[in-house]
Length: 92
Image (tube, rainbow, N blue to C red; front, side, top):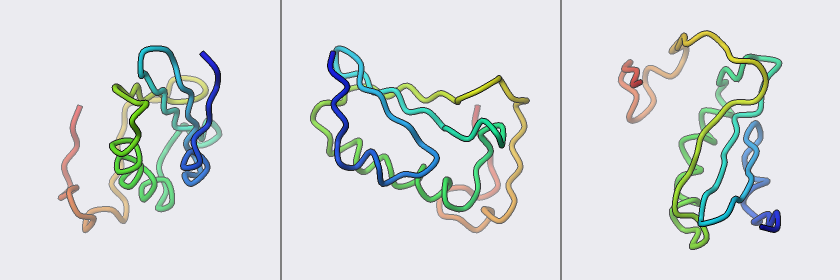
């Protein structure tokens, strides 16, 4: 399948996208130097990207992955506690 890059792919620093066959979109958190930890900008992008994905007729499923080596599964909510939808909870 060709690597068709939609215009919205570039709106999200710290995220990389790759279209695969059958409507699959790979979304990679691309901050390996920071073990893919989120900062305010990436957190904002992760909360907004789903609106563009939902409006994208070419995407049926999204696989979320991280670049670089695997990192420890630690979530630190620092500054995001008051963000809508977070409420200090962590899902696995």
